[in-house]
Amino acid sequence: MRQGWVRVAAGVLALSPAVAGAATECFTKAEQDAAVVRQLQMEMMTVALACRAYTNLGTMDYYNRFVERHRPQLQTSMKVVQAHFKRYHGADSAVSRQEKYDTLLANAASNRNMEFNGDVFCPRIVKALASAVAAEPGTLLAYAATNLPPGEDMPLCGKPAAPAI
Image (tube, rainbow, N blue to C red; front, top):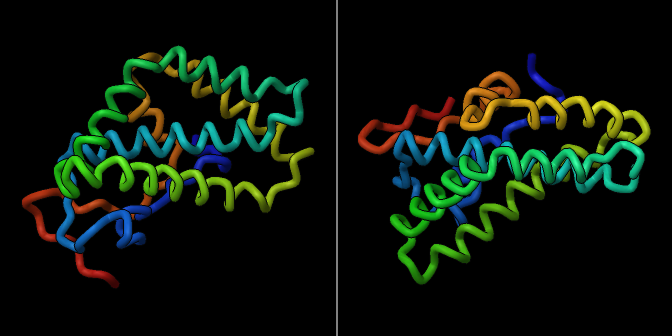
């Protein structure tokens, strides 16, 4: 079942030339997968922070448990995304490009969540956070596939990008 609170920051790399670089930038399958896991983590962090004033709900506790339970996969995904930026932008620019990318993900998630009334939105978030905490370690990509709506494709290296419609 797809959770309404989680939406892919679809095409963040493609929509932000300052972050993505040239239109020829492509992603390995591992980089695509890692970017999806990173997007999931940023979505969860953003909604947990947005609802932290509702202390009785424990959204930050859920997020912290999510990070603790899935730390190895989150760290691996972060390293793969970092490697992508190093490969395309060089070691000198990789960190700043990564930070811009993370900021774009967080801002996109925050902008989507601003439209919700916290009294209604935040109690629903607890269920979504709890389900992510309950996901088996190592399964975040599969979790994201069933809980994130499809976003724009990040072009795979060696395959031509689909034409814009």
